[in-house]
Image 1 (cartoon, rainbow, N blue to C red):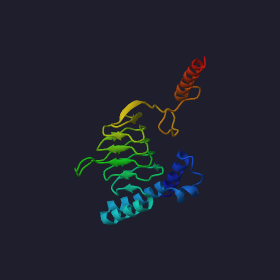
Image 2: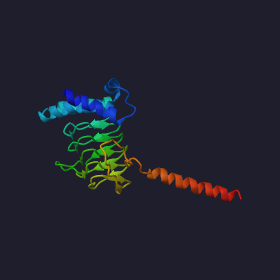
Image 3: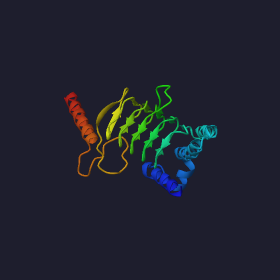
Image 4: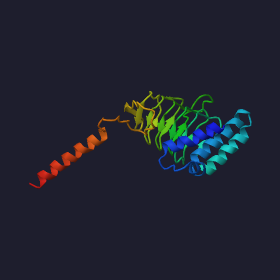
Length: 213
């Protein structure tokens, strides 16, 4: 248990540049508090004391603004950043090293009692306000863009945006470094975003030069 707590804290220190110290993470990060309370509720739920588990989950939601059903299965080194408005449903399964931003919903779309919530692979990043709905699978290391609505399976290393969500390109992150959303530009490679902005600036300069003639 001590090792789990240590790696939880380290995950926040690694992925949130605003995390200044271990003490700050322990005291000031509601996402971490929600995860710790969920572990307690989940163990109690597995013993069959479901009312108690649901009560703990309700108190956690009241304190953190994050709603996690006690039956949801959540892996290691999860980061729920900011966290307000996050909803994780009863049959949701989340792998290791997943990052979830505020306003995310892992929800169901039917009254079916079986698996009706998403399964999230290892290393996935889910942007603010994204909705992942139904018993679908999100492959490892996928990026789900802010406010995307995902209702179909997502391949590994994909980036999904839009409503309904569609794939834009393969991320293909070569290193283990945490890279939120975008591509990991290797050393010596030109940043494609910078190149596009520079091209736009050159066109704007050319237009301004023509208007002054």
